[in-house]
Image 1 (spheres, one colour):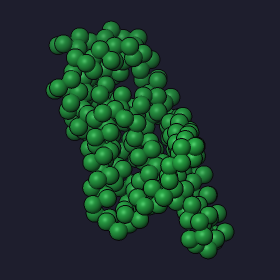
Image 2 (image 1 turned 30 degrees about the vertical axis):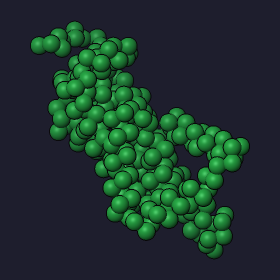
Image 3 (image 1 turned 180 degrees about the horizontal axis):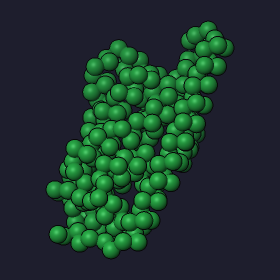
Image 4 (image 1 turned 90 degrees about the horizontal axis):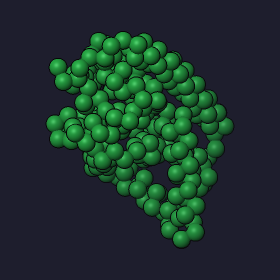
Length: 239
């Protein structure tokens, strides 16, 4: 949940700065939403491409995920974000394994328990990667590159990423879609429906609660597995 708070804070800071310097931020956002509605296929392709590029460059994708809900709504926003995040994770994994392996190794050398994570993946790769994706302990971009220099199998990595990132993606996109609904009502673009707004709020609360439950349980299980692995002799990574 820390990442969500950071993303929201970043959005608020951007809005404040835009207000001080006179940027027409509201007009830009409204224009982007209108363009996305009128050019759905082009906007979808552009969004996925930007998400993949952000993953390779290790740019946090939380704001993009929130934007997906605002621009595309919940179902399409989730689908596009999931596509972009999985393709981005795959691209970063390939870059880390075959292009920038030494650079990644230097960066992860300071990770606590990275050796335990590497050893655990050798024993039970898919399960460990799934827990790592479900848990917010390791950020998305850092995990993409970190896993690239472990014994992780590429197909297991993709499947674990696809499943493990889904709960957080749904939460972020849902939040973005709710923001669009509130903005529409505030601008007079629709008639307030207390039933509809209540259902949106209840749905968001339920999504947050479920996501918190999943991430806490996954974090506990991951820490237990890594703690147990750290008590065992670590294998030679060069073998």
